[in-house]
Image (cartoon, rainbow, N blue to C red; front, side):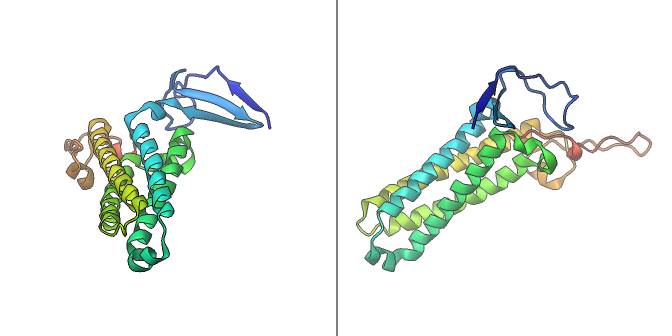
Length: 217
């Protein structure tokens, strides 16, 4: 399998895919594996949301390894529900955040039908749910350590993941407020997005901002 790196990255000027955002030479790192052409989105990898996403993946994996290393049949018989809930939340966060990180790094979210997904809105609500359940799972593990150091370490990693998820949620909300165009959507207005000014009946119809491209990260 041959890997070919293409260092000459074309600057997108709007003539490419509909809805694609313009990028400079420093934003994309294009390479090919055989006949498959790929590009790494360096902008997302270096952004605060990209860094937080990567931290969530690493920390959740460390927590899963720690609680697996602390397995004892007697403890699992007593507190299996707490450990199982932690495993479920940790695995869910690890798998979903890894998949989404790959999608954003490879700019897959800007292709096909996925470019119509309001990523910042989805990201905010999903991260809020993850942070809440990860906090509950970590408390459950710490409350049922069963004299196993691995469970203690898993609880610590769980609280760290909770903090990173909460920070990711806050930065996603701030980015949504700052970069989303004015909207008449009630949910977006509640989240702090600027309200769309009312238009008179005689004025020409304008494009619905909800159909415009929203920032991905």
